Image (cartoon, rainbow, N blue to C red; front, top):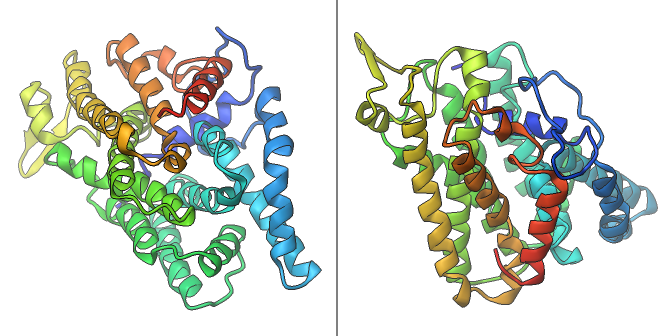
Length: 365
C-alpha cells in the first residue's frame, strides 16, 4: 500500500501547463510535478472556451432542478466538475468541448470522477487516508444508485446523470476498484506482464469512454471496441509519462512489467522481491510498452470506417494519445527528457488545439 495513483502525475502536470501563454515553442511546464501545488489558470485561449462552449449545458443543468435552488446547486456542482477537468486533465477537457451539448454534462461528470479517484493517493501524506478516500468513492457509487444524496459536487452531478440516463454501475465500480487494488498492492510489487497494465488502463480509461457512449445513447459494438483500444493506449502512455514522478517520489520504477524489464536486463532480484533498476536500457523497456499502446491506437483506427458518426467525438481522446506517442518517439522513449513535460504532451497548447480541431473537423480520431 502507499502507492500514488499512476494517472496523478499527469494530472498534476496538467495544472502547470496552463500557467503560461498558448504559443508554439513555449514551455508551459517545467520542474518536477508537485501534487501540493494549487491549479494554475488555463491559457487565455482555453479560458475563452468555457463561457463560449460550456455555458449552454451549464444553463441546462440549472433548468433541470425541480426548484430554482436545486437547479442552482446542480449548476454549481457541474461547474465544479468542468473546472476540475479543465485544471487537472486539460487535454481531455478540450476533447469534451467537441461533444454535443447534450452529452457534455455526463462526460464532464465521468472525467471529474476520474480526477477525484486518480489523485486520491497523491493529495494526502498518509497512504491509508488515500485508500480510505477511494473506498469512500466506492461507497458513493452504491449510494448514487440507491438514490441517496451525497454532499459532493461530483457525486451530485453523477447522481443527476444516472437518474436521467442508463449508465452501467459496473463501469464506475470497475474504475474505482482498479485504483483500490493498485493502492493495496505491496510497495515493491511490479506487474508481471504488460497485460496487467492493459487491464488497469481499460478499467480506468476505457470505462470513461464506455459510459460516455452510453450517455449518448450510442449502441455500437464497433464503437465499444474502438473505445477499448483507445482507453488502453491512453492508460499505458500516461503510465509511462508518469514514471519520472514515481521515481522522484518513491525512488523506484513501478510500472515497467517484470517480463519486459528482464528482457532489457533491468530486473533485479533480492530474495522474493523483484525491482526494476535504472539503467541505459530503460528507454528500450519504455519502447516495448509504448509499442503495445501504439498497436492499440492502430487497431482503433482500423475500426474507424465502421464507427457510427455520432461516436467519433467520444473517441477523440485517441488524438492526445497519439500526440503523446509521437512525443515519446521524438524523445527516443526517454521519459526523463524535459521536452516530454512541455505544453500538452510535449507540444505547445496552441499546436495541440489545432491538431484536435483538425481531427474533429475531419471526423477522425
